[in-house]
Image (cartoon, rainbow over all chains, first blue to last red; front, side, top):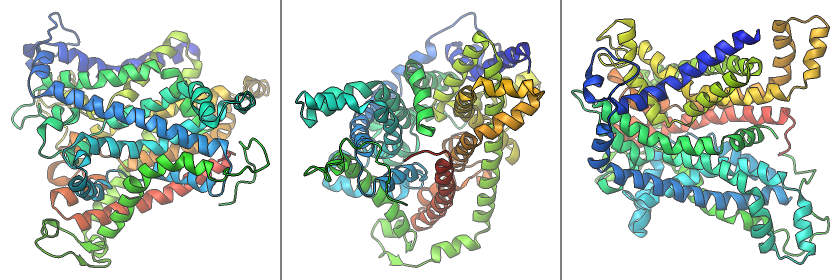
Amino acid sequence: MRRPVADVVAVVAAFVTFFPIYWMVLSALKPAGEIQSLDARPWTLSPTFEHFQRVLSGENFSRYFVNSLIVALSVVVLSALVAFLAAVAVTRFSFRFRTTVLLMFLVAQMVPVEALTIPLFFLVRDIGTVVPGVGLNTLGALVLVHLAFSLPFAIWMMRGFVAAVPEALEEAAMIDGAGRGTILWRVLFPLVAPGLVATSVFSFITAWNDFIFARTFIISAKDNQTLPAALLVFFKPDENDWGGIMAASTLMTIPVLIFFIAVQRKLVSGIAGAVKD
Amino acid sequence: MTQVAVPTGVRNARPRPGRAFAPWLYLLPTAAVLLPLFGYPIYMLGLLSVFDYRQAQVSGGEPTSFVGLANYLTLLEDDRFWSILAQTVFFAAALVIATLAVGATLAVVLTRAGRWPRLLLSFAAMAAWAAPAMTGSTVWMFLFDADLGLVNQVLGIDGFNWFYDKWMTFGVVGATVVWHSFPFVMVVLYAGIQAIPPSVREAASLDGASEWQSFWRIIVPMLRPLITIVVIQSVIWDFKIFTQIYVMTNGGGIAGQNSVLNVYAYQTAFGSSEYGLGSAIGVVMTLILLVITLFYIRALYRTGEKL
């Protein structure tokens, strides 16, 4: 393949790939009349925030947005801490069943979590009768299940980042008289922080993009819905409110996009590391 | 599994007191989360699948009764289950092939393209990758909307419903899934190609190999372990597809014609309140994925990865 050909293919592919995102944002900004028009144009001369205003003011959208944020950020923080400790265990120690434990983290990533909604529904319902904070209809339940489902991959990925830190640094700290806790939190933790951020993106996305658990666990408590449910509100049996759907979709996509682009480089090296290191 | 022969991270050979417990201490929070919320539900899924568990039992109206493999026998005799299993496998296979073809082609394109086209494509791919499955689904639905969709207006087929015919629907949903998943393949393979020393390709071209030959005879064999991993990872993802089908076809399409195993299990459990039967479908899925995972682990070992 000659370079000019590659350039053209790359630009065309980039255009096609980005087009749906562009169309989403554009449609969110188009006045209702233009969306209803049977002559769609790939631009608009009179952008408007009417759909965003409608979405944000009505249907509890901002509440759902905050709920999604609370769930995703809680998962990110908890998952980072727990995964960091587990990654230290499997990279800095050699112990019986170490390989077995690692393989279990790998196998866990393959389990069809959607199928687990069935037992989890009953589990969460039963837990809720004992601990009200994490039962059905609570955000706590969502945090817990997403924490569980994001951990195996987070540990798998963190393993590469922890392994990349030379042990000499920890040894030096130990010689200087630092205790185990100090070494862990003052030496190792700051050093793997960039990796932790990259790993967090995945945990964030798992929790943020969730559709099925929110749909299954949050049945009657309208106030505890998350974004996907808010999006479905705009689907109407007779005619879909596409302006509203696109505005809501845009609002749902932006946080992930920012997160993703901010850590893009780390992400790629992290994945390459998680796939093969 | 063999014991770890080469301890990668042992600081000193002398075991110190308490040393043996330390790793387990670090793993304690993980265990506290995963055992009750991951391990136990898997066990419960298996357990539910051998019980007659429906709405009456959930509400406590009737006692739950052990039915052995009756749920599985029901599945074996259910034509719908077989046809959904078949179309899940077929759909997943088509998705994997399409994702791989697009991802690999664009990975090669990336290695050849200039700086700006490369950055442009990387950015676009990142955006598609980052977009939540849910919003990706809604945008593609809008693009293919019968009346207001851009696709129909450009093609001049106003009012044509893409979500009426079974295979047409699978096609549109499939395009959405590939759009979401090709960036992963592209990025990983691009990184792999970059890692091949340029001298290898130079040597090939000095020996008179054409571009085509050097791709198939040099790059592909050298990337084989990485390709295997990407393929299996895609198989696992595409076999588990849920959100796109559920959202775009409104829970499985007209009369459930576009259902896949994951959606079918969910609908059986929560739609028809057949929790035992739904669990049995879940177990079947898990077993199939487990077999694929074993291949995956073998492929990982082949790459020489030290666990």
